[in-house]
Amino acid sequence: MTLLVDQLFRYPVKGLSAERLAAAELEVGRAIAWDRAFALAQGDCGFDPAAPAWRPKAEFLCLARNHEAIGIDCRFDDATGMLTLIAPDGAALDASPLTGAGRDALAAFLAAALPAAMRGTPRFHHVAGHSFSDHREQVISLIGLASLRALEAAAGAPRHGLRFRANVYFEGAEPWAELGWVGRTLAIGGAELRVTARIDRCAATTINPETRVRDANPVKELMTHFGHVDCGIYAEVVRPGRIAPGDALFLLP
Image (cartoon, rainbow, N blue to C red; front, side, top):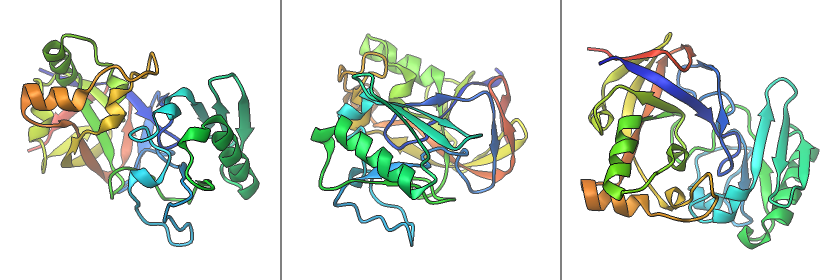
C-alpha cells in the first residue's frame, strides 16, 4: 500500500496551538522552519540565550504542566516576523518575537492571560537556529493515522490527532508499523529523513485540542491496550527537500 502524507503542521510557540502548512522546505539537521522557534521560560528556567542548549519542557510553559495554555491561539507570519496571540477572553496581541521589545510584550501578555501557570518572572525567548523541542536534537515528528485509529478503537472514543502535536501525519501503514522504523531512512517528497526514536507520550495528550479540556488519558490507554506509551516517531533530516501533503512516503532499503 502506498504511504502518503496527509497533514503537515508546525507549532511556532512551545506549548501553544498548531499551524497547518501547505508545504515545508526541510534542511539537514533542522526542525521544520519556525517549529518550536519560540518559548515562554518560567522564572526558574535555566535557559541561557547567550549559550542556547536543550532544557526540560517543565522549565517552560508547556501543556504537560500548564493545561491552561490550550486556551491561547497563536499565529506566526513568516513574511512580517509578527506573532499573534489571542487569549480565551478575546484579548489579542501582535508583536515581533524577533526583537527584545516584542519578546517583553509577549511575555507580559502570556503572564496576564495565564497567571496561574506562571512561576516567577517569565521570559519569552527566540534564538536564531534553536528549537525548543522536547527532544534534545532538532527533529521532525511523524504519526501514522492508522495507529491513531487503533487507539480510538481500543479506547472506544475519538482521540484527535493534534493531542500528539506531530509535524507529519501520514496514511497507508499498518497500525504501529512506524514504531519499527527506528534506524531506517524515509524518503518524502524531495527530502530524506532517518528515524531516530519512538516518541513516548506525556500528560499533554490528556487535553482535547477541540474542546480545550482534559477528557482522556491516552498514555494510560496506550499502556493498557498496547503495552507501551509510544505514539509516533522522531526523524532527523539527512537530505534537504520540500515536503507537502499528498507526497508519497517510502522506506528506503
